[in-house]
Amino acid sequence: MRYFLIVIIQFFVQVICIGQRPPITSSVYNVWPKLGMPVISNNGQYLSYSIGYVNYSVNQPSRIILVSSNLKWQKEFKGTTGTNVMFSGNSQYAFV
Image (cartoon, rainbow, N blue to C red; front, top):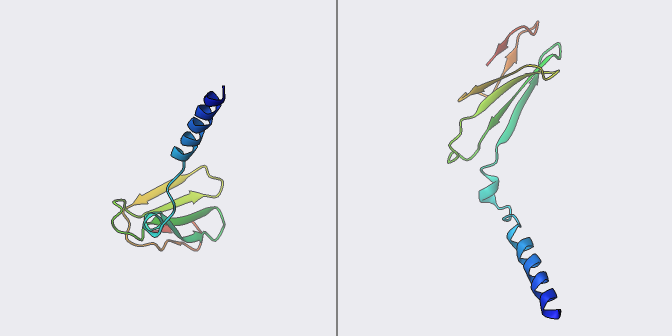
């Protein structure tokens, strides 16, 4: 009975150790996406933000996302080089 408990405990310890995530280092942190340049339209109905990567070894293009404030509408522009989005004075147009 004692050996059985030792085997069961050892099994659970191994399962817990295998399920652990690797530590966060600078090499892992550099491939995380970066959120930048949030802009809200004048009337507050639309907003935009950019998602990009600092490390260019990540093979994903940067993106600009336009979203309505009620989250019923969203448009994504992939592969954009600029990160500035401007809304017109009456908030009818977005310039990417």
